[in-house]
Image 1 (cartoon, one colour):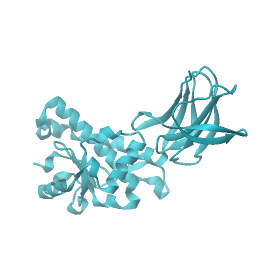
Image 2 (cartoon, rainbow, N blue to C red; image 1 turned 180 degrees about the horizontal axis):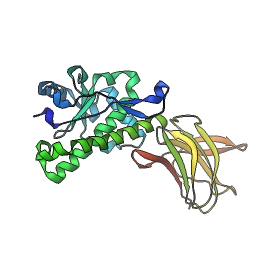
Image 3 (cartoon, one colour; image 1 turned 180 degrees about the vertical axis):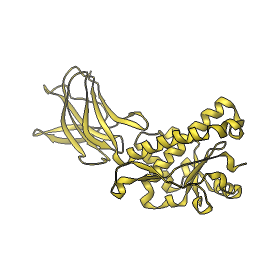
Image 4 (cartoon, rainbow, N blue to C red; image 1 turned 90 degrees about the horizontal axis):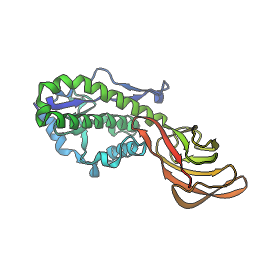
Length: 279
């Protein structure tokens, strides 16, 4: 019965890493974790760790998702995850128990070249965790042993597949960056991404009209940026974010740079947003 309470995941292979389109593709021929022995799953569950003590590979995957603004640190509160020889025993590449929400990932994801697929698969399993929590709240603690759960499984898997695929693409391509100007003047903006997904890492100037939004050429895998923004007239200079004392040379002048973490409105899609608000 314990194995019946599992959700299986797809592995994510970013085809662009192999020379094809940058799309997270699902692995074919996987088997549901229902085929796995309960003793194996119980042993792997016992070795799984809480978020604060995750295996380094899993901790790095979680941090990549946080940096990309797919999840917040609070979303990982109570998460328990670990590695298991799932595929060697005829199982899937990852699985999450419906009742306990312990996440298990196949040992293949320990490899350095699996960092992005592991992060995308972690996102998939986190989606299952949220699904399970919502459905248990709706139907009660017995939901995971019910006919309703067995009926829902295919739809839940499709939803998690779509979420994981979208996150996989963001992990590889990065989020776009958009500037929204709430100031009363045209603002000229210079931006630098701490973790650019592709060239360029720096842009500027980008001139944004009052009340307008402007896309940029930047794509980044983290919301950490440095910015200098000023009105075309020379004042005001935007003073949001954090001052670290750094200065850039722009138009022959040393100007103050601000550091900030940009949010994203939608976890698995959409840009990082820099909102300029001037007093």
